Image 1: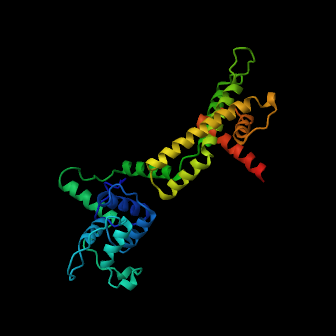
Image 2: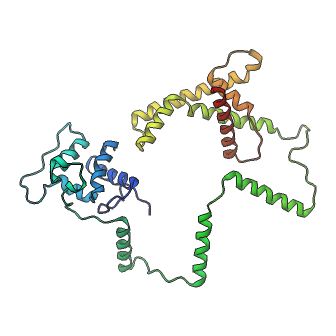
Image 3: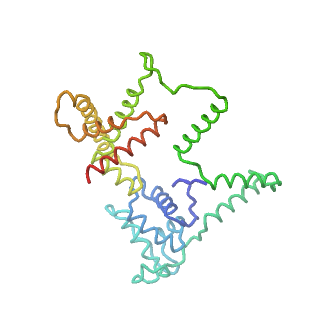
Length: 311
């Protein structure tokens, strides 16, 4: 069952990295709306989740003191970050302030949590009791056999796209051999009506080169690497910078395409973008594969050539 930060159960104790991030985002969405979820916040809450705390328990601890202690939790400062707020208020729930990093130093959570499996079983049982779903019936022998077959096929995994394409070509070839019909190779005619395969493959190569120019832009790579590392969406400022970088890379790719197209006639020194586009045009292929497969093949070949040139 897939969860979002909004649907993550507050009583469930996160058990892995993905669940920890879901629980952290749920807590931030309820207590600190508008604040980004930082790696520091994930690390702070992860220690409490490892100790058997859930989101609901942390919310109660942030507003209350442990049993037996008098007073109230201090108010949050106007300039206090969510990370500092969490550390300051949860500090009251340690047995010994000098032993913060010890798992057993934390007091028992004010709200008991449960595992995700237990939560799903209880939810399923409640739905059955309420009549929302019917009780699962026992599978027949045919049903058991069908389930085993499905599991066996799923365990083998699906072949990659190139393997499927080759298998399809082999099936077609076997069928043609069985018919015993001589079929001329595709586009064997050289007349004026023959399809221009070279031009079509060059158009695909030019598209792949422009996409590679955008992908290799330093600003684009830096922002995407940061977002991937922090596992979040870009904010408004990053979106603006990213759009400008992509637009600039697209313009450079268009100019590089013109330079590459006139390289033989002008004998001019090509820039990095034009040289990349010319390399893609030199590796234009008519492989008979799909567009995605052809693009992946071109990227692999050009990356290999580029890495050899750098060595």
